[in-house]
Image 1 (cartoon, rainbow, N blue to C red):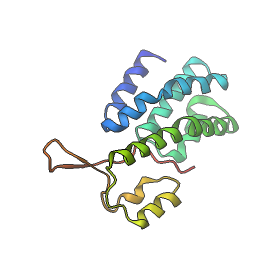
Image 2 (cartoon, helix red, strand yellow):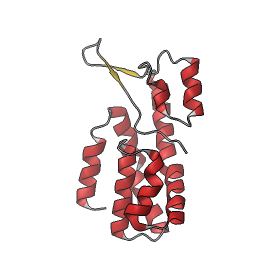
Image 3 (spheres, helix red, strand yellow):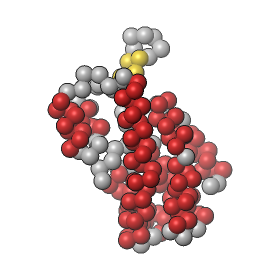
Amino acid sequence: MTEKLKQTIKEEVGKLTKDNQGVINAFGWENIAEEIGKKYLLTDDEINIFQAEILIMLVGLEDPDFFTQNIENNVGTSKAEAEKISKEVFEKIFTPITNLLIEKLKKSDKVKNASAEQNINFILSGGDYSAFLNSPILVEEGAGGGDTETILPVFSIKK
């Protein structure tokens, strides 16, 4: 991984909430991505591009529906290989990070007043947090005591 990519990762992840930063930084996704890249015989430059594509997903700048296509186009793989890589990334990086974030939210008692309809919509969407956007239910107490901040997910998984 280049120093420039390391710096970009640090800057972009630094823009997320502290909970999200903690989970993403502690997970070690960069090493997992490198292992996946080597498994599919990607060059060092292609692995850097691949890691950048994962970062874009982690910070919520890209729709998950375009991830496979971005791997194919930007890393330079075939469509079939991009689908295999994408599936492995979802299994080894995105899903575990999402699960860790959900567990952290559950333990922190930040989910308040979730309706049954919102829970059903969340489950049926395959984990799309937009089911909760009609009313802000994920809140974090601000430094001023009464201030609240809506916490949105890093990304959603629709696979």
